Image (cartoon, rainbow, N blue to C red; front, side, top):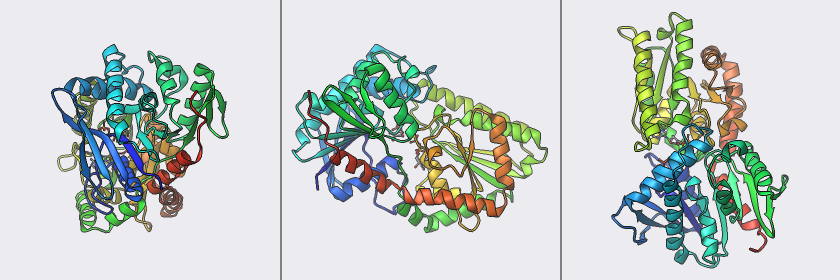
Length: 465
Ligand code: ADP
Ligand code: F6P
């Protein structure tokens, strides 16, 4: 079996299946794939040094090695806070109004990709396959090719791919996508993002595109583009549900609700997650029903994210103001309708909170996949499951079609869906949940990694021109 080299901006080693501790989907997926095959997980250490040296810190993890480099403050500003999170993130989430196009961001992004290629190249051996993660490294494959690397190299994009008419607002968009076409395989979370990518390649690059196989051909170079929807680590997550921590968390939240139905939201504090719009929908529900404070408790868990970026500071201020105003208007002396919590919890605690909640509110304005939707489904009690209210604009909506699908911009529709969820008969809740759970169980993260890597190893691209 070929050795695997994973590249991602953050390298965060999962403590092992079943362990409690905050781990994103990407971290769990990469640890599982590397544990199975052995290899190297390469990326930014998260640390800053005065001057970039490219020196690698190598550490042994569970069956594989991590290799990390430190970046200098200017790199972090221009590459991570700048091009990745002030240019690409908003544009790829359809927020062209928030996208900032600064020359130095682009230069910093190119520089860090070059640094990464320089540090990574000496680690790559002949039979290795290289799997690059996410929007931080769109040009990395091209940089490695320029240095003579001929190994199989794949990219998986965890975020949406925007429609062509939005992407063309990005200066040098042609160069960015041309660089991506040096990957052998590019994976997307959903068919919608894949189709947007293929449309761009045909329209803006004049590439020959075969929709059935996802082959994008320019000259004698070809790339395979396909949808590989990511899942959760089902077995690991279900094992967490058996822990005392999960059971205590469920009782703690459930017992504190004073017989009200609990609705829950769990999201990084990001403008793509539709959090102010969610409060607006609740406003409609509460202003339309006198006694709602005695019927519904909404718990929003929202750990702060990317706090050096202005738009994230603004979304936090907006949400604080809105929840404060909402609670001022709708609380009673002994009941507060929204609990707003800005901190992380371990995954076993999250399991317990999801299970205590009879409604999962997952209403991003745009999201590559959204793993919270899948975690919420997995955590439900099969005999008395809750209802998932899910945005049509999350990648997860392509698979989780038995959720109550909503347009998150339409406060009236979201309010009606919450009302429907509150009153849904047990038989319908069970019927919907069984179908949702089958998807979450059968399309998990282990299969996702296996499918991507099989495609990467199977479909040899034509040789470089
Ligand atoms: P994104 O990758 O944009 O943050 P996802 O929904 O795909 O969105 O993944 C978020 C992951 O982070 C989920 O696994 C979720 O459980 C985890 N997460 C979100 N909020 C918290 C929190 N407060 N504490 C612990 N984990 C969290
Ligand atoms: O899901 C997209 C993503 O950017 C992941 O790559 C990342 O782990 C997560 O969101 C959190 O973002 P950040 O690493 O910028 O805190």
